[in-house]
Amino acid sequence: MGENSGYKHYVAGLVSGVSMVIVGHPFDTVKVKLQKHNTDANGFKYRSGFHCTTRILKTEGIKGLYRGATPSFVGMAFESSLLFGIYSQTKQALQGGDHNRKPESHIIIPSAAFAGSIISFILCPSELVKCRMQIQGTDSLVPTSRKYSGPLNCVIQTVKTEGVSGLFRGGVTTLMREAIGNAVFFRIGIISGGLSGIAFWSAVLPLDVAKTIIQTTPDKNLTKNPLVLLKSIYRRSGVRGCYTGLGPTVSRAFPANAAAIVTFEAASKLLGITRD
Image 1 (tube, one colour):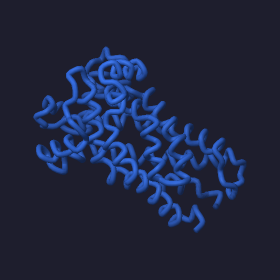
Image 2 (cartoon, helix red, strand yellow):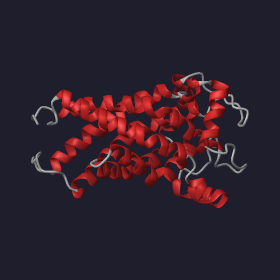
Image 3 (cartoon, one colour):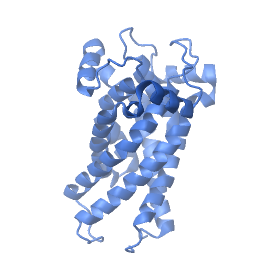
């Protein structure tokens, strides 16, 4: 590996992020709708992820499953680029320059957790916009929501009503999710991209549920503490409520994360930063 190949990890990561959104965004839309509408005090709106999917397709077609895809593409591209780049460079630094030695857990885990913490600051605003766009729609099972005309309008309206800090609503929860999830992802990702994705979301889905609610609720007085919020959800809906969206999340995890890993490795080879 050449000493000047550091930037190539970021390029490979960016391509990886784009492929991940193409494959995984429809699953993510279903997950967000379930997390928003199946955790409130009025009970479950959708019977399952499949039921939610059929409702979206019936009322909005395929484009409904890709609602909020624009901020997702932008956010995931930058996130994946930084994630893989920072992870690779931190891992190399902790290995002391020995790039041929297979990294061990005490190197992988802190490198991944650090990379996850850093990218959370970029991921939080893009996911906030994505989630707010995703919960809009015309489904008769939930209240019609057309508050934002597009991603840019969502950003403008959020800043206007909540200030710039409003774009970082749910930031602490996002940081916790990314630090913990990526430590698991990269540790298992050595074995399988698909398995690592499932492990990521199995470990942090309750935090993701809390993040979605924090970012999409119009109630400014709602607690920003994910643990307090999850306790409230648990009292109403039990463990099932805390793991709302598990079906589409697991369904998404294998193809989307496998695509990300495969694309990253293929791009790395094309860029000459891995050996055959």
